[in-house]
Image 1 (cartoon, one colour):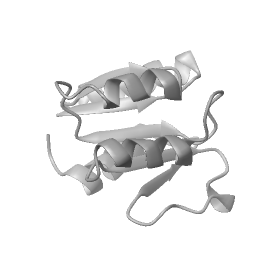
Image 2 (cartoon, rainbow, N blue to C red):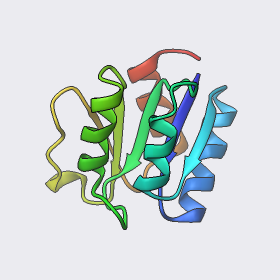
Image 3 (cartoon, helix red, strand yellow):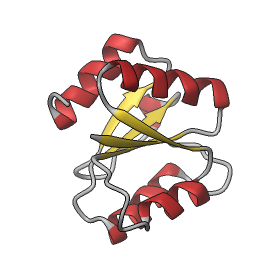
Length: 116
């Protein structure tokens, strides 16, 4: 399964991608909403999940998710936020608070997608 990870912090993105890879997923990286949208809009790119930071430099995570759902209405979305307690999760989407452990990330992805 291919998962799109959108995170502007290079180190955080690298760690998420590494963990997802260890879990058996193929992680595709984007450092901005603009880069992510190019991937999302590619009909030849399979995607099972969009995992996005809430605070991106070019768009808020919610805006990216809304645009992604216009193109791929059934795409599951997982937001990552350091301000999880003050973030309202859009209906049908998911949230993981930062910082999160490897186990928390694994459990959340498995909850959303099941085993790879």
